[in-house]
Length: 163
Image: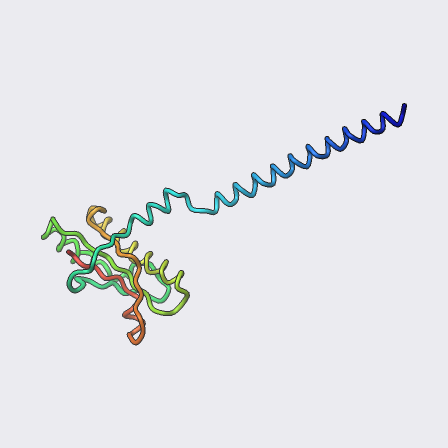
């Protein structure tokens, strides 16, 4: 009689431990999933960043060039006159837009350089919008690289073309 009760008790304890193990696995899995979801950029945010760049060819010489320090994306302190030059040019030609092209030198890794180049162009765009230029009149080209032989300081720039 006790042997049958021990067998049933073992089955109940086994099922109970199985349910507990499944609950623990579920909690750990959900926690891991939420952490990864929080670290990954939202699809809408990633799409918004990708939509910022236009596939527009550069036409003519740059109206203004903004030069940046190594690894820096903050707009230089002496950029105000150049921002004003772009605003005046856009006011004179209401049908035109400004195309910003970011560049970088060859120091650092490719991914970091692309990000710094993009952030430089975004800093110029933000300054133009703050100066009253409608955001739809500011186009960004994908970050570009300056290849070999040139001055590294010249490579760390954003060019603005009104076209």
